[in-house]
Image 1 (cartoon, protein in one colour):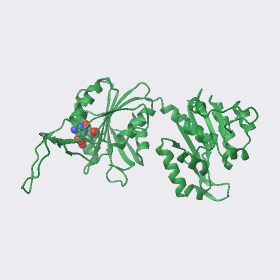
Image 2 (cartoon, rainbow, N blue to C red; image 1 turned 60 degrees about the vertical axis):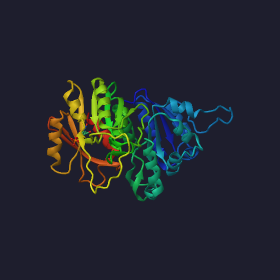
Image 3 (cartoon, rainbow, N blue to C red; image 1 turned 180 degrees about the vertical axis):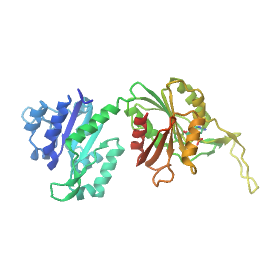
Image 4 (cartoon, rainbow, N blue to C red; image 1 turned 30 degrees about the vertical axis):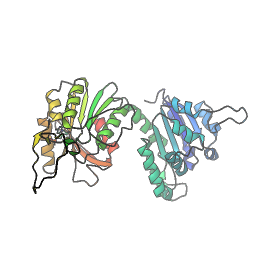
Length: 395
Ligand code: C5P
C-alpha cells in the first residue's frame, strides 16, 4: 500500500530518534518516497547525513539554507505529502502541535499538511502520564490526527513504564493499514442519517430527543476516509464533519428526513440509519404560539412518523446495504434482531446501554453488530471515531 506514497517523516529530539533510520529504511523498501523534516534538537540524536543518505533527499530543518538563502516551503511540503508521520514525537513537539506554536519547520509543515498525520509519542513514563501530555494528545485526536500509542517497557531513563516509541515495523503497519482502508469504499456512495429530529408543536416549541449526532458524523468521517462519497441527512446538531468531502443536508423533522433519504437512496450503495428519529409528531402544527390554558393537564394529539429505515428496506435493490441502529432496554439482542428482520436491514448495530460511557451524548461507545446471516461482532468501549472505523471496516 505504501508504493509511490509521499511520506514526510518528522523527527524530534528524543532518544528514540535513533530508530528513525530504521523507519526510513522500511518505508523506502516498501516503495515510499520519504522527506525528513527534523527539529533542531533532533540533530543532537541522529545526524541529517544518515537520513539524507537513506532517503536520497536533503533533510529539511531550517526555514532557510543559511549560505544560499534558499527558502524551504512548508506549504509545498504539506501539499506534497500523502501522509505525515512524527516519530518520535516528544512532549514538547506534541504540545506545540496541539497549540499551533509554529516556531520550527516541523510544526509549520504540520500546520500546512493536508494529508493524514500520525504521531508516535516517545518520552519518559512520568511525562507520558502528565495531564498536559494527555490533554495535548486528546487535542491532536480531536483535530483528526492519529496517535500511534507508545508501548510499555524499559525506557532510556532505565525506568520501566509506558512511553517507548512504537517499533518502526509497527508504525509501518499502521500506515499500511491506513492506506489499505482508505481505498476500501472507493467509488461507493454512502448515505447516513444522523442526530435527532425536531417535530414542531408551534412556532417556538418542538418534540425532540437528546441525540447529538456524534456517532452518525463519526461514521460519515470514517466512510469518507475509506474513500466513499458521503452524504449525511442530518437533524439539528452542533457537530460538523471533520472530513471536508462529507456533504451535509440539514433537515428538521422526520418527514423532511424521509423525503431527502428517499430521493438519495436509489443512487446509494450503503445507507446507515443512525438518526434518533421521533416516532410521533404533533398531528397538527399551530401557526401561533400555544397559550397556557386554565386546565391542569393538556393533551397533544400525535401522529405516527414514517419509519425511514423500513421505507428504504422496502425499496432496497440487490447489492445495496442497509444498516440500522438499535437502543434497547430489555431483551436487547432479540429485539435488535427482530428489528433487523422487520426493516429488511443487512446489519444492525446495538448500542449497549449496560456499559457506562456508551450511548447518547458521550464521546465513547460500545456496540454489538448483528448480521442478517447470523454472525455477530462485539466492539468494546472505545472512542466513537474508532467504533465508526470498525463498523465501516465490517461493511
Ligand atoms: O424502531 P427503532 O426506532 O428502534 O429502530 C431504530 C432504527 O430505525 C435506527 O436505525 C433508526 O435510525 C431507524 N428509524 C428510522 N425512522 C424512524 C424510526 C427509526 O429510520 N421513524
